[in-house]
Length: 420
Image (cartoon, rainbow, N blue to C red; front, top):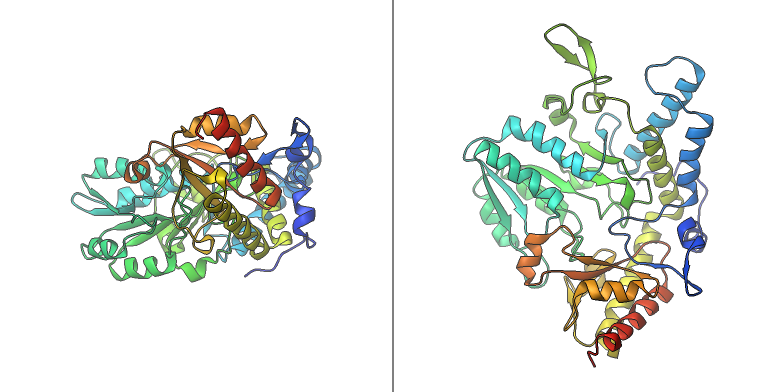
């Protein structure tokens, strides 16, 4: 793994104190128990300070100007790209900034997809995908008259690998899957699936949105063709995402959006494109956001992704144990693998007799922030036979005290809804 650059080590305890929203907000004298990082993480001081520094000390457009402010802004922006690429074992040329993971996946669908998927071709997804990794492929398959097929999810929350092999035997053009499910918490064996898919002649795209902030990710080991993730779930700002792509594929793909910066020459009737990754970054870039994401990566490295992963797994294990053993957990059904070692930093569940929205509302009234709904995974909800779930997701700032608040809050839910 790449070593941290330009950041001093930060302990877990120190890290937990570096989130201004959590310092400044309280409910009835209690701190916020923020358990919704799978939707959007909180932002530490270092990220806010880096973005503020750009706006107050280095504000200028990038790449075009030769005066000192513009050069400083360009160095900050491209320096962030270099550190982000290095962190995951990618290269600058293969690290494209986008608006978010959704935009990254759409870029692949509209460029690589429309150049390589034709009538009768097969695209393979899984039943546990977020809508961001479903809808772009639906649109592609409808446009190209291609077939869309799904790898089933077992009752244990794990992909049916035999079914995957049956689909791979049909020679799909693409296999797209999530690294860590945002509902089940399932950690998919991406490297193994990528090897099987490549042997079948397929290109592999991975939605790494939940994985990148939670666990070590080293792209050379995964050996996938496209890997997408987003900044706002990785302690960074909104409005910035990343697509890591295999260089040979990116070179062949046409631009997604045309305009300024992505060109080399523009004539009256045709244009030529600049080098990677600029070919896919038309217009004025998300300068402050990229700088902020670079600072977020520095901050994660200062804390240590292995330490973050171990900390969050311990909280998941504590939550699973408390739900299984406490009176407050009666009637709770946990979705996904029941071993903390087999899942990401979240626990999604239903409570018999209670709608997830009511659970979330009652918990929220006590300062416990959880997510309720279908989590942008309606096909998976149908597979699970539920309309929605309640999801508690953990981050570096959470503690056992937050788990206590969650479990105690479920007791309040039971009393409020008269479930006992």
